[in-house]
Length: 152
Length: 152
DNA sequence: AGCCTTCTGTTGAACTTTCAACTATGTGGG
DNA sequence: CCCACATAGTTGAAAGTTCAACAGAAGGCT
Image (cartoon, rainbow over all chains, first blue to last red; front, side):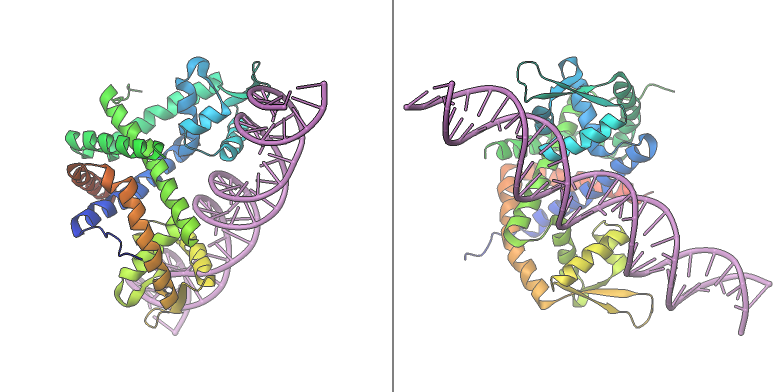
């Protein structure tokens, strides 16, 4: 067993700031959406992906991949969203195994309402408190992380 | 109702890269710890805080605050860690309501083992794939976020 | 065709987190 | 001292997530 390459003091400081800030920011955004719109952050993310898809519908597998959720989890979450009337599921003609999740009109309206508040909160606690250059750095860095993850 | 200040295209790109990369990175780290050491990321975080505290013990409330968990959640998580023998709870002499969570020797050893793998994974998927300057930017940015959150 | 393997999505059970009480102790004011 | 009120931590049930197993359909091979 070789000695691991521990982070140096500065790296550690930055990493920990990220871990802490990230947890707390995520929690805040989740609470904010829940209290104002009855949507959890993962639910919100699903609605966003659907709203951006052609015809506002996506196959379950693709939606799961876009939202970085397991299929099982998406299945459960979709059932909840369906019972709220924000989403409905329809079959896929070309592949009888397939299922399309569609955003309903009501779902689109709910997303629109939620997004208006959400963006305001994201600004208030993130965008507006950091340096524009640092935002670019974050975008660059996490794009690199995604590429690294995709390389597996 | 005023029109919200939507993010511009570039801000949106960076923010989304962060949201996606962050989810996937967190998931990877969690899975990695679980499969190799049977610890979830939140459990790991708790052990880390305890290991750094004087005498490797902290009051429940303080531990909850450090690890950004609710008291209730910490209580449940601690029970699990206790049943694994990694933590034990003892009373507080000066405040009879109080409870100290202590890291056991076994807990410390388990944390040490886990940390060696964890740091390697953090490097592999984060530290080593991003620019050192971007890491600084991330540290700076999330420190600002934390300060903003604390201002409430 | 028949068979075997892979892929899609769902299901139910186990586990974790959240939420709303609740107990017990501390604190400050009359 | 006594009371009301705040604080520490726990609890159990509800809600959400993970995990393993499953049914049905597609694809490929002989």
